[in-house]
Amino acid sequence: MTNRKKLALMLALVFILNIAVIFAAQDAEAATYRFGSRGDMVKKIQRVLKNNGFYSYYIDGIYGSRTVTAVKAFQRNCGIGVDGICGPVTLKYLGLGGSSSSGGSSGDVDLLARIIAAEARGEPYSGQVAVGAVILNRIKHPSFPNSLSGVIYQPGAFTAINDGQFASTPVPDSCRKAARDAMNGWDPTSGCIYYFNPRTATSKWIWSRPQVTTIGRHIFCR
Image 1 (cartoon, helix red, strand yellow):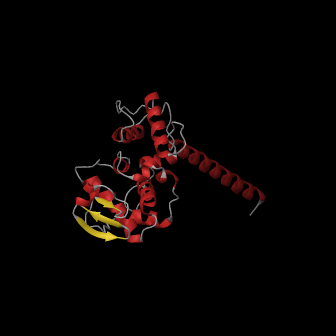
Image 2: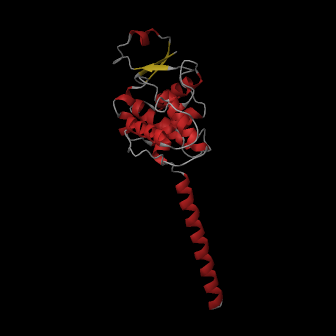
């Protein structure tokens, strides 16, 4: 190969790398939504915030001051950085992360895995899947919100949300796998929508629910 051909090849490679960097930067920017952003993703952000009680205005796809305020309130509730910007972390907490080929978006998997870790990290693997299944069963039940984030952030639904464990607990690989298995249809509870620890439960109402099975330290019921 002549020196001229080598130089041409090197220049072509540099050009290709530069193009790749530009597209990567564009993709990174596209995954961040802030004041002034517009479009369908902003509508999805507003809808999730509204479903969870953080946003009470029109779903118009315009990332204005009211959306910023709602995002900050949501971030504060989750224990993550409060800046009013929907970057990758906030989008995952909202359940609006990227797509995944294994049973739902990667944002949904991350969100479900995080609540499983906070609620059932010390449980046997089937117990972790069972907690995930209960959450997914609630989405389909008329008594609960019809979205993953709506169920997880429903006021008073999960102790781990209120005491900070949801935001601070590391998410082990087993919980991510359990989230995927639950999303792919494994339900060790046979359709339960509640669970509780009999050693700590003080509510007479939860004890009155029809009990189906016990897995680890949790009783699962309908």
